[in-house]
Image (cartoon, rainbow, N blue to C red):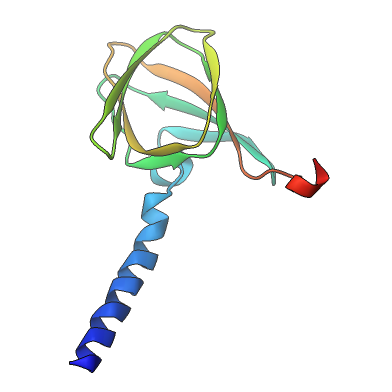
Length: 130
């Protein structure tokens, strides 16, 4: 009984640790055909995203980031928790976002979506230094 409990506990821990990368996948890793990295450093990554009408991403997340729309379009964001959010963007729209929970992005418009995402990879200062 005790061996069985240890075995299943170990298997559960293994599966949890194995699934962590899947829960925190970035767009460039899981959707390389629609994400082109333009610039990258230790602190930030700038990526151009291109999505054809009807195209969907794989499940992914984002750290804190800035975005800039290069074209007009409509994107539906399907969050893993079941919530959906329609984003209507116009060329030139921009904004910032805190880290995002796992989601799938879908181009629900009739035109190709193009936008830039600049993600913060880490903060260079500790709280003591601020």
